[in-house]
Length: 231
Image 1: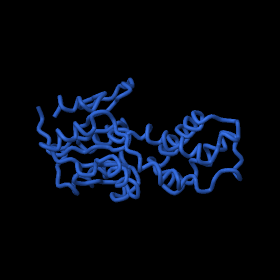
Image 2: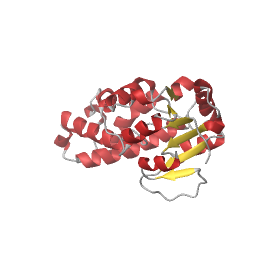
Image 3: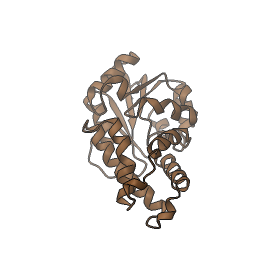
């Protein structure tokens, strides 16, 4: 079996349960701003439309087609107008409120802490994320993950976004690792798996929903506990 020394994790959707934490935050905002008064959409519809809008905007952001500022400014306006809310009735602070509340949530995927405790004994652990600088540290602290990782490499620090191989190269240089001794663990086939592959780094595809695909991957898991069988 190949010997690895450096493990690079994605954060959102891999360790930190973005969907669960975002849904809790959106429920708080729905109640705080009494969106039920519009009688045109439920909290579940609010969550579903936001999720679709946010995913579409993130794809644009990761393709360098929009900026972080544009993503944050547009997502709630687009969500709520799709749900029939007049733009004048959209709370002007809702995006800032979401950004403030969300990273304070603590939900992580099953076995996250147990697996990281196990891996920390034998490997050097790092994060490599397209998430924004201003909230990654809060997420890590809120979910008790900070102490596991030596380096947190963000797209803003590196100047590149996954799947750009230059972001992975920056991560290798910053951590003193080589591609041959490194392994990338993430949930996104394009950003994490293909990005690492193109940088010459082995990959673990975290696929909890067991989505069908035809990609060539070094390893694939549906539960983080399976990492103990690989490492």
